[in-house]
Amino acid sequence: MNERIKAAREARLLALRNPTAVLSTVSKKLQGMPFGSVSPIMLTDTGQVIFYVSDIAQHARNLEADPRLSVTIFNPAQRGDQNEQGRLTLSGTAHKLSHDEGSEIEAKYLRLFPAAAGYKNAHDFHYWQMAVEHIRYIGGFGEIFWLTPAEWLLDQPQWNHDEEERMVEHMNDDHLDACVLMLGRFLESGMNWRNEPIDMAYVRMAAIYPDGCYMTVQGKLFFISFLDSEQSTPCLTSQDVRQTLVRLTRLARAA
View 1 (cartoon, rainbow, N blue to C red):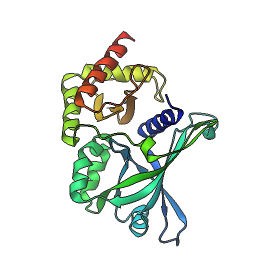
View 2 (cartoon, one colour):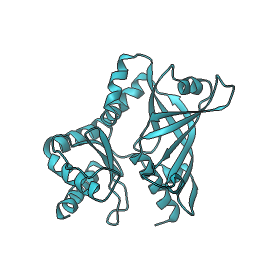
View 3 (cartoon, rainbow, N blue to C red):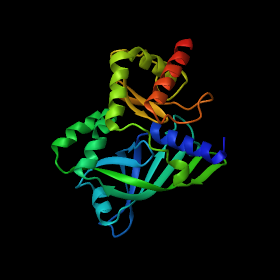
View 4 (spheres, rainbow, N blue to C red):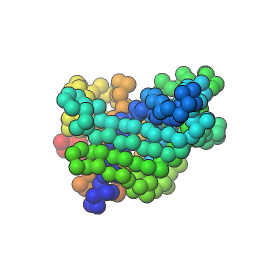
């Protein structure tokens, strides 16, 4: 695989597995000084950045005056030197989504961040989207890249938000055992979670992307990649997703 494409995939995986980021804006109050704030983020299927904030938040006020934004994401160190961990900065221009645009992505966002449903009662919350223009990825020693949007972004899949939600509901209603198997295999691979038994009652699929899916259990999100040594291309159709989930379930059952 091309080194840069590999780096772009690793960078996207880092972003999907760490859905809390530092948003850096140009401060209106501090006359242009950088201003950082922490927020949950969600990627669109292609790789643009979505976040949900109040109009009175400092970073929202800053973006109203100057839409330039940088989003910093990193793998938190479990021990030792944080500088040895992968990190990613996405920069671009942000804009507030209209009510209709926000409604399209809201179901997926609330599946990933259910606590945000309570914010809807506060009428000053809005969804924002940042169009990614610059990508700086550091994967480790000697793995330093300025990636282009063409390398970062994926093609738009052939399903819409409603179809994605139906795929998720189908997995939870009819194939919850497969979700448990896939999550169990993921956790056994040593991915940042304490080694505790999985309770079937709490495991749910939360979202599907072209390159993976989110599982949620006991308030924690886990992104399981579809891409591995057997599959090098993202899933762009619902049939692709079905075949990949069957393959991962078989691998998990065999393990």
